[in-house]
Amino acid sequence: MKIVYLTRDLMFPSQAQQAARSGGVTLQVVGSPEQCTEAIDDETHRVVVDLSSTGAPLANLVAALKAKKPELELIAYGPHVQSDRLAAAKSAGFRTMTNGQLHSGMKMVFGE
Image 1 (cartoon, rainbow, N blue to C red):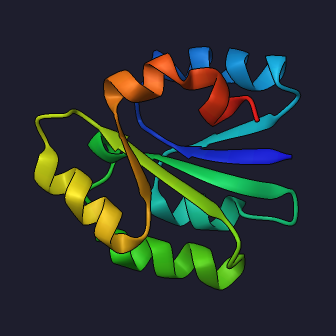
Image 2: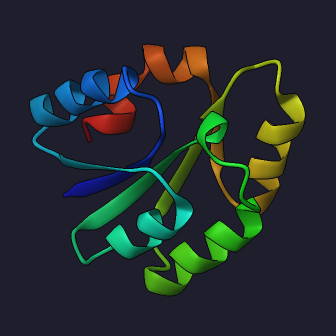
Image 3: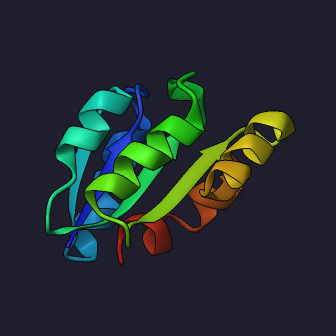
């Protein structure tokens, strides 16, 4: 199984990578929506998007991802104070989490 992780964060991906390894999951970290879409393959079952790392229209990203693999699970996370951005992600088709929820549920998000 593979998870594609869209982020520009330099620190957090190492923690996500560790959670993925312990769960036997391949984690591919990408830095742009285009790279995210290109990374989708038959092994990919989930995409995780750091909302702080992209300002791209989320509906366009969802459409591109679902065109490649309709059954993808999509998760987006961001600061709880960015409620408008989290709401937009939810409307676009992502399951949303705050940064705190992601950190406390890291093994569930990256390790399954």
